[in-house]
Image (cartoon, rainbow, N blue to C red; front, side):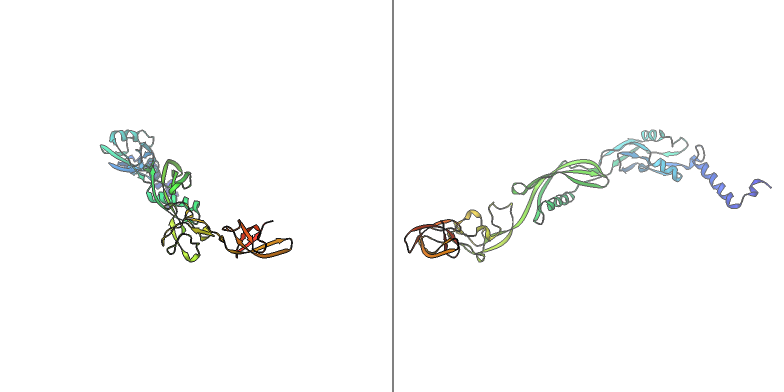
Length: 327
């Protein structure tokens, strides 16, 4: 009985398959079954041209994997194309240890290779800018009205990300200037400059009716509207409290924006008004009447004539036509 008769059938099959695999991957064995077909035009991704990107490779799996990562030269810049002569590509391929003359290599006369690329679109930039100003302005309503980018170019394929490099606030009329770093797959590729304008919207006070010079406003005299604060002059009013005890210095039309420069402090009492004079010392309080000898403003000194004694006294103007005598 020979040795093969002593081996179980399953073991025989394993030996035969192993021998065939060994024969196909050992130099000089079955090399005619390995074929490399280079394409005449192709798009590559990386900085180096890989054989697996420009050719169809017919070979055993592990050998195909090794051949696919062989570098055959530098890629063009992202978005650019270059032409390489077939002879040069053949020489580059044959220069690797995994390749020999018995492999079938089919290469066209010339090969056109383009580097894949991606653009940094305006929507992506706007999204990044809006995210930055959202953190800067908090809950304030705003809108990026315009922006311009300098330094933008095609970038390699991959995961593109942006990082604010040099931050800044909002200047006059809502102008801004930012710098952003551009990364692809975690590697810095560029730094771009972005300039533009942001509108910030806030409530402002307008005339609710036609107003006249000298009017001291009440809540019924005004209305609130939302406006871009960078498109209006400085000195706008956000609340009626901004002009409390203030009188208009000009006539205003309904809907017109109210500004601080349009107001002056309004007197709480006028010259000639009869007021209540209050003199306090320790726990003693004396109340009498007097006549204002000048206009009186809130919490400011005013000259008053005591109606009983005829003497002139100075006191602080308080609400309810009251003057507290100063000692």
